[in-house]
Image 1 (cartoon, one colour):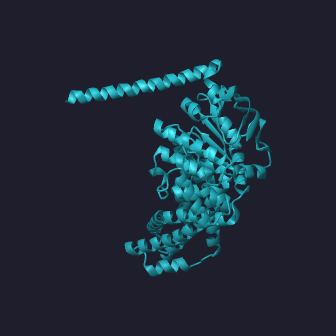
Image 2 (tube, rainbow over the protein chains, first blue to last red):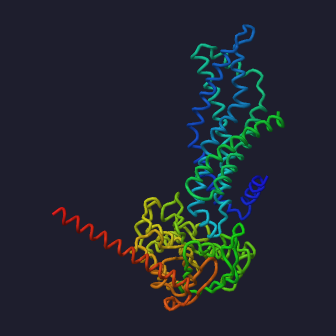
Image 3 (cartoon, rainbow over the protein chains, first blue to last red):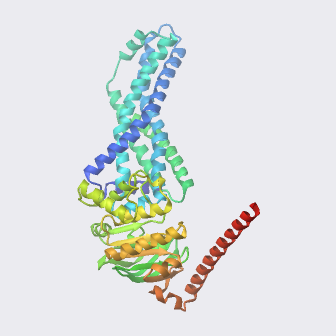
Length: 242
Length: 266
């Protein structure tokens, strides 16, 4: 409870003595480029293969001749949009972006760069952390959309190349019983996960004390806590929004 | 001028500062002297507002700093320049950007004005050609110079230096001390230097405050320090001398060894 209280106080410090909108905008764009561009490759690889594996495994389990093969396309789409793209992408980003945020802030803290900002009269949490959170809120949904697209494409390629189903059957499945709200649900989840990953990792990094060893510990803690928070939030979102 | 009165600070029940009072004059090198763990850096952090004192008052030219409204604290902070022990340069920025940073954040200067000021400050610390270098490419001494340039860039009124010559070779340490002294006198800045180096105190210090176990044991001019009868301060000066002598002996031994090796090779 004490840690949670400290976390809330940390969040409230982000909006006190905030930076000018011009600086905040510039810093957010810089951070968005760092988070977004650097993560596209890993997100693309992970989501493509997850879509491919999902397609192959569903077709392996779908032995009943009465069920049309297009169901595979339908199931890949539903699983991708509802769960795999937002959650797995966010977990991957928790590892990549979360450790990066915690490590960067932790290093700044132990090398007195955070103190230097404070002495200059700049609110370090607002200057350093706020742009990271805003950038994550901006970039995570974009990466999740890319992940959705590539995962479904991965499923299409795997299904076609392995001969599990034809391209036409896959597309028929994709287009059947589509609920647009599911996309909204996935994007809401991605925004929630983005906030959790960026804020938890920033908190861990910002309050690092000691030396290089503690920076490593902060990074590990940031990833672990972010992943746990994502999984809990995933369940809560499903309960509330579906 | 900075005045501190009855500063107390404890961490987890351990008293680190015990009723420290004093005055740091402008245009002077005010030295905060003491062995490691005596509370010098904590006092410095209290004065600049990085640590909140449990009790006591801090005033900058008559304006209360500690426990004052945030706006007033911010206003005073914008006149503060600080050179950190590890220089605390921003890793992601090059030298010019580091020096320009406080100007970009705290002033309304145009880009051209900022560029001119950065050039001037870098020239002042003797680094006019290092603007494009990243902090990782700089030596310890160069980092300190950039730190000084960044501190003075926004025309600071108060300069704080936390062990400015730690980790530097003796020659570079002297250069940094000289630079701080020159800047202090040139711009009539109130400078407070935390150090445990007696060389710095004797050569460049004006007013000296000696801390021992969180208490102020002696205060006076650097020229009077050798005549003091405070046992702890005398012990500290003596240990510093021993250290210096030991270093000299070590250097002489190394030189003799090198000469011996050369002769053996012949």
